[in-house]
Image (cartoon, rainbow, N blue to C red):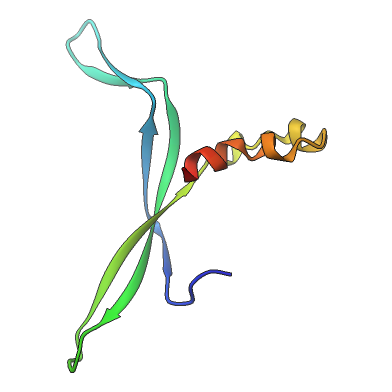
Length: 92
């Protein structure tokens, strides 16, 4: 159970890449190669003003790893820590 004031904003999700590198192609364009893909999900927390009707939003971020990164074979073999290794690394 999380914070009841956090409003999850699944519509505000951005892909973030870690541990890769930028490579320049033959056409001069640059692209990202390799690394680890993680989704950043926004959480908004309303912050009421003092003696005013104004409320601001404090935007916090959390990580989400794509479902294909979950190692089902390791989970079925009983190695639960290896199965969620991707999620654990993303939260670091």
